[in-house]
Length: 185
Image 1 (spheres, rainbow, N blue to C red):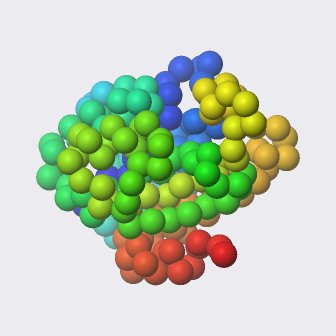
Image 2 (cartoon, rainbow, N blue to C red):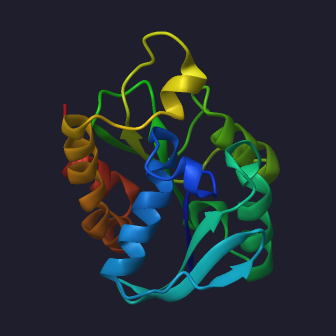
């Protein structure tokens, strides 16, 4: 079984912001695999279905970004999902807009949502898919809670649409295979 968590903030005021790229990716993945995110449990919205023949839970934590780990930990503990089967999708200001990076684990990279997940799981070895939202020119909070320009939105949407193939690749052939196929130099 796999847990696929898309990070973001609940509420209309945060919809379509850079920080909600993980929510958008979770919604897109759920749509692609006909998995309605219609249950409220573990402090988030979730749905269960199958991807690449495996049972998967798609989770959108509603704890706000900085406490995402609470929701992820509760869900993973309930279903007894090991860290290597937890895939986290989120925004990354260290990547250019529209860039995409898959990693098998590592540090939080200054991302508070990831910092909380690592703390709550007491582990940093779980796959992650990072979507580039570009660096902040001035204020980081204003940047990540800001909306994309039309051009940047098109680039990020193109990256998000790859998640339909990335998740089955990770499940079927592993993180390294997905990195080789989808991480661009």
